[in-house]
Image (cartoon, rainbow, N blue to C red; front, side):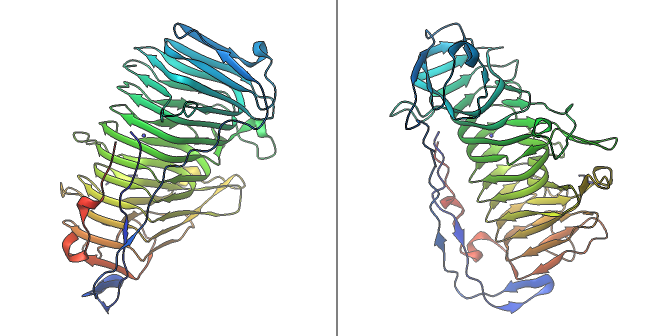
Length: 427
């Protein structure tokens, strides 16, 4: 039984005004003409240059670059500018002074070659941005590292932003962070990481974009990451399985990402995003793929249940599986330390799912949430070749009964008034 990462633009995202008569399972059929609403999605590039601070030039354009905040003597609002060129490594450390610091490109900066990488250690309140030079949208390019991880983040990290990067031809995880040995204590910021942001990033022919181990093991909660944001990631041409896999994320925000043409030969039971914890997954476009767009393995820290919200996503043309999955696990529920999370799946457009027909393909597979509830409403589906026998919208895999209302199913995209070709991906 199934268990349970170029400038991005989404040229059109169509929502529907739906009316009409009822069918089984909350389905609406024979609607009046749909009225498309086009939602423009604009790449956001946060300001990276502070109003005051020094400009510190580093690098020669070649070799191994070390940026050590203790050696530089970084001050609040400093902007450290990396000279253009091709480096074998960039190591950034000891920038964790409690006030904003920026590392940015001065021209095109590359790290190229197998075993060549960027390493981040003892950093915080830091923005690493490839938007430092006008006319260059991805000022940091890491490419052709076929053997090792492209970025390694070491230790507990608070308030780190990595943005305007490009990755090509990677043979291992693109970004790897491992705090899985650090036992979580809600009262101590040294026991968890927080406010990591990955923004405006392109990945072509790489392995998984982000891997962060963590979870509950023998009653201990480890590897906690609070406030993770992944946005405007354009990920394509990969056979990676999971694009993102995070072991324990509290209040994640995954939005406005485009995933296209991945896992053409991969047959693992994977998700595209596997997010363990709670948060929001919204305004993402996932097309021509294998795997659930999101495997929401739901849980909350502490004793107060939170929510997993899955909304305004478009998921089209999956070779395998339903659009989403909601699931909890008994061994991840520890009295006084973790509890369940509720799931809501709404206002998504999903079509042509599970074309291999070797599994049920509907809006969401629903497993036990160990106390949590699941609501599935106001979704639009079309062309499901292998629906659940009683539903085009939910595939119940446990005793939990989802609340399913106001969803609409069409036999085809054309019948729904959807122009699949309008879901264009520009690279």
